[in-house]
Length: 580
Image 1 (spheres, rainbow, N blue to C red):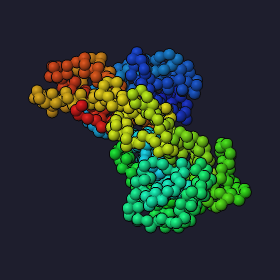
Image 2: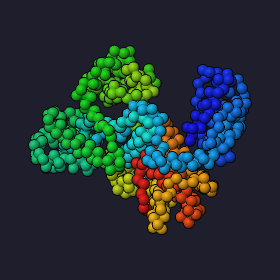
Image 3: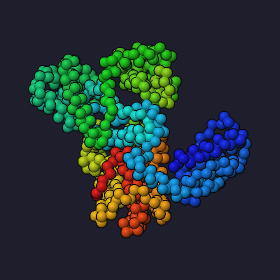
Image 4: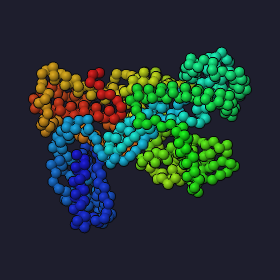
């Protein structure tokens, strides 16, 4: 309906261009919003304010000229000028009937639009180092990234999703060393286990798998000497220890422990995400960038620009030219590439694969890394504005009014799996989705589990289940539901009915806004509003006790409401139960 009103005003603008009131070459974008106050109509636009200067007229005068040029529409009841030149549109009851019928006709596709025009978008999210189970912080990024992908697809973008597996570099060395040290203990040794190795019980589980399959094959007489000769608090000593470990076991031995850890942990991450209703189109290995020589090729391409230089035997990227606080090392003096090197190659590879918009979902602590990556992409000839980073704040859990303490370094944290088991996937995804990703989130575990109207996910799901209950009752009373198609929606004259219908009509606009602005939380707010209006309407009117024709219209009104709630819940990865 909103699009039809936009087209109506675009035609009026065209008439004024033909008359010379508005310059023919003037670019015009007619946009409508939903006013907060009922007295301001159903839709409002500031097009007269934006075009007044070009037309050489006062905004209210131009607004009147636009109204006079409007063609007739059965969906418009009246049009008014408000304030300095806003135009308010009041829709007719026919528009209400049309939107309700459209919801019933389109079903699961209602709300789908084409604001994306098929643009190829790659959304990379979670991408947690495979050094342990996913925790609740990763869960928030997973919920946001997956919901955003669903919404953008629904809005007409061609979206691919990707998990970047950081399976190369220093953290992988520490992971493999951690497993080996636990393996030594299972072999009867007593090595010193540095506190800056990975501490979780899952390291024992991986070590036990290797020990069960390989026995004492990787036990070396000097192992305890290597372990005992390190300072327990020194990162430098830890690097020396990993070097000794790799040298002692050799390439094959090192890969045995690393691959064992990766196989188990990545499979565990896949399983966790699948249970969280998150599936990726591709799992991209960091090591593949080195195996395919893409890291070296990208570095060599940068060296041909003015943004790469050599100093003290290392290769530096001139990041200060792009707003970073200092230049950054890409290749160390030792010849070893930094994390930045593989990140540059990875993001260039995304563009090389034909994606025109890259969206990365990062933890808020990576804020300082954005300009760095944008700068490297610009230096390689890409448009840095095509690279967008959404920062996700960590979620703080509360149980019984008390903050749940977590420490990822010490291996003491609430895993995503534990969260799902405690509150369920529906509640977890809904609670994650109801805030902007950059906003702090307090996650009340007790509220998420409660079956009360204070629990937002319960409140919305109950609205869907309530409608299903009405139809079950109708069937029990032998009311012929097939006769409800083609209802006379003009019979819906109660204020609560009009408000509910008008709210349902907003769904396509909510989808377009959420996709354009990368803000899927708008859908959650909207669903709560729909649920509130449905509950209010249900409590005020006995739908099944109505006269036959009115009952038919009312049944289809709530059927349309059920459809919109189901569509919205599906977009945020939440189920729409029929019974609660």
